[in-house]
Structures are given as structure tokens and as C-alpha cells.
Image 1 (cartoon, rainbow, N blue to C red):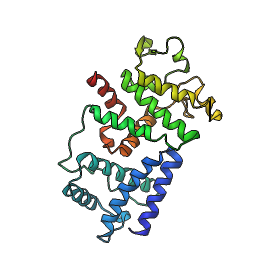
Image 2: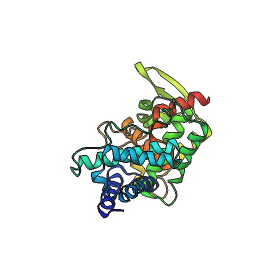
Image 3: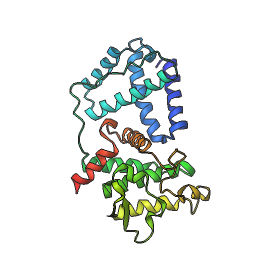
Image 4: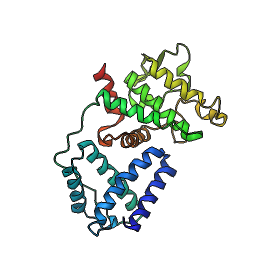
Length: 267
């Protein structure tokens, strides 16, 4: 691999870690995708900084000819898009060569839902993040599992999910009272998995990480430093795509809306 390519990949991964708090496993997945592309270009005496849209199409075509699954192809393209957007934003490249770049013709269309196996894979990838973590990283890992389990168990709108108030748990913990459009309230039952994920998330500040307790016990169930005071739907959507990369799924196929459809379909 060209040393300059390695340097830029490292800078990109550092940004993901520092600014977006991306998990180590997700960083490793992005790193593998980008390193594979860098090796392809290096064998052709091309630096990633100089790669054209045609060069990127050639790379994706080579991946397809090697028998790479459509989901993996889409994931690699997504990794390249984010990498080049970062380079363009930093002024390292003048133009993003992935703009307008479509995946290989053989790539499948985006599904309207995920299979049960896909959802299980996504949730397992989120659970794998917990191992060896502590502090804020552990909090983010438990929060993601909680968000996934709640969304998949209830099918609530993503805006309703991220803006759940902290007192939503008062009363019967097996049922959430959701305030939807027009201020109308409805009762949403929770399954065993969702309750367990919720308890694990709320308990993180009560034992080994007392300093994190205030982050959980605020007006919001999922508080952040955003202007709204709670996790935004945009941030959750991006975190979900990062998790999809880690799980080996196409990030183009995974979104809160798709997961909500999976709830309805699997029910």
C-alpha cells in the first residue's frame, strides 16, 4: 500500500473515532474495506488521492468478479464514499470521485425490510461491542442495543424513539406510553429482550461507572449534547449504518425506517 494512502486512511479512522465515537470493531471494518481498495490501486500505480470514478468502477468490478456478495460490494462503496467525503472536506482532494457513482449493475436493489437473520446479525454485532469496554464507550454500546431492541420490539417512529422522555418508564415497565403525532398517546408493550436491554442501559451508571449516571438520568431517556438535548434521528441513522458495516451488511440497506418495517413484517 502507498504510504500516503495509509496516512489518509489513518486520519479518516481517527476522525471517526474522535468525532463520531465509532466503535473499534466498526473502525476495523472500515479499515479493511479501504485497505483492500488501496492495495488494488497500488498494484496499478494509482494513489487513492488520484483515483478517478472510472478507477473506482474498475475496483468494484474486480470485487464483483471475485464473487463478492452484493451486500459486501455496497458496503465497500459506502466506505469509499465516506472516505472521499472526508478528504474533500479537509481539502485533501479537490473533488469527490464517488459523487454520482452507482454500484455494480448486478447489485441488488435496496430491500424494503430486513430478514430475521439480518436483524439478528445486527443485534449480535451491537452486543459484541460491549466486550472489554468501559465508560462512555460502554454507555454508547449499551445505548445502541437498547435502541435496536426498542425499535424492533415496538415499531415506533424513529423520532418517537430518540425523544423518549426519562419518565416514560414510570408505572408498568412492561408498557411504554408514547406520545405520537398530534399529541395522541398510545401504549406500546415491551418484550423480554427490550426490557433486558433497557435495564442494562439504565444500570450502567449505578455500578462501575458512577460518573455516567447523570447522562442517563435527565429529562430524556437518550440524552446527548445536541441542540435538542437528546439523540437526534440523524445521528442514530449514521450510527446504525456504522453498525451495519461492522456486521457485514450493506449500510445502504439499513436504516431506522427499514428496521421499523422489519418489525411489522416479522410480526
